[in-house]
View 1 (cartoon, rainbow, N blue to C red):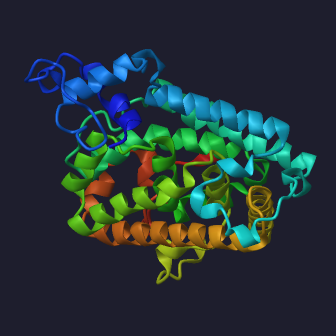
View 2: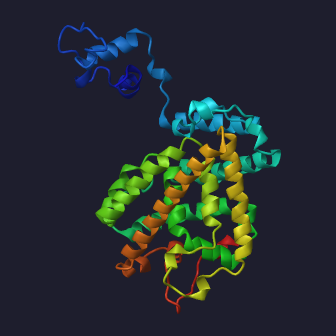
Length: 348
């Protein structure tokens, strides 16, 4: 482990049993022998000038990254050197471009609005009402989703700040939220909590089978490659929601699940697909890199959809769990035709 990482992880442990030298406190610490004595290694870190006060907490690091992102949006550019490694093309393909040439002033305003809309709804709620989610390790699905219900309502508030979503027919908004409920949760949850909370991890193992739990953990690993940028997944969420498709009911011919104004939904989705393309292009040196990035995004969406279908199939055996859910999340599950009491009218 590099000294910088060692100090960041263990600076607060000085004087504890594992960081007290078993000799006279003068062990030779070199690259080869740095693991011989943790106590002397940590002491050497302090001796050369490393300071515990300069270590950022996770919240401070997240706040710093957000500030950097805001400043980049204001300037309308993102330095190529700070893009994620796999996004950087080979040297032969690296062509210097002006990031602003792909994003119009209107694009930059829309991206900034998306950023602040998510900050003022989902992130604000996370920092106040949902600092710990779930609050306990649940042993039943309905209790997990009941605790999720107010968080989902906050997510709807985010969507209502997106003009193209807010302008849709009320019934179409209800349909697309039901059709993409799992996709929204599976993208938004790791976006809000970049590190899976322990209670959530234990809950997964308690309420789902091993197959679904492994898929959820893999989801978190896949999404990490997009967490470097605060904009990408927020726009992707809008794209996923603005879809008239319904992978949850492939075998169901219920016409009530079909949206009335599919053309408006498609047009709205296309706006954000093109916006995301231009945004990624502004951060890349050529279109080939953007295609690679979009392919990875598509693979992530397919994985998320696969998880949703697995959970739906799993839930078919636990209809009593659905009956115990809060009205909001209960209405997101497939219902019998004689039970059409939807409780998402607040999306209008």
